[in-house]
Image 1 (cartoon, protein in one colour):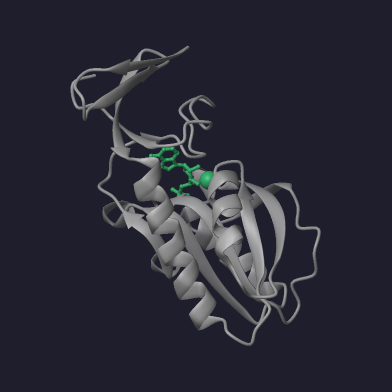
Image 2: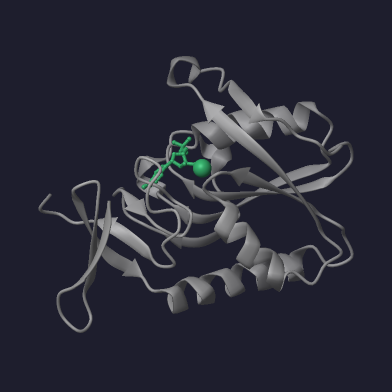
Length: 191
Ligand code: IMP
Ligand code: MG
């Protein structure tokens, strides 16, 4: 169930599965953050041919927008990861859709929607390094620094750092809903 409501001229809110969310980043603000990240990557990776790995499902929209601004001879491939809290110490990550491209001697840039505790990225980075990647960096559209539990999961290229609150839209879901929204929404405080 997805309704769009407009309260005031500036404040846009929606309800998703009976929870209220307020607009947090407009599509124009998102576009500016994405272009800024792409510019930094283009500069830092000049002369190299990075392999981008998009982490499904959440990062599909960010990856699509980001890659349009990348001027390097880049490649992109996709994985789907599932992390398990129970194995937090080893950081084991299951691949529901495994890597289809060789990572040996490649400069890898992982594309994530959001880094929260960092568990998922912690496990995935380990996997890529053991698999022979030359270098591994993360770009995450969003980062919750106050939630981070694994320092090696800190993204080098961040669209925006946000407080530890639940967000949806622009690829991110609440119970699989809301991924299609073109702005980012944050959980309303009075739910
Ligand atoms: P982490 O392993 O704790 O860093 O987070 C893993 C995944 O949790 C992310 O890739 C997202 O899919 C999901 N996640 C974390 N915070 C949010 C949020 O605020 N909204 C939607 N999904 C989130
Ligand atoms: Mg994700």
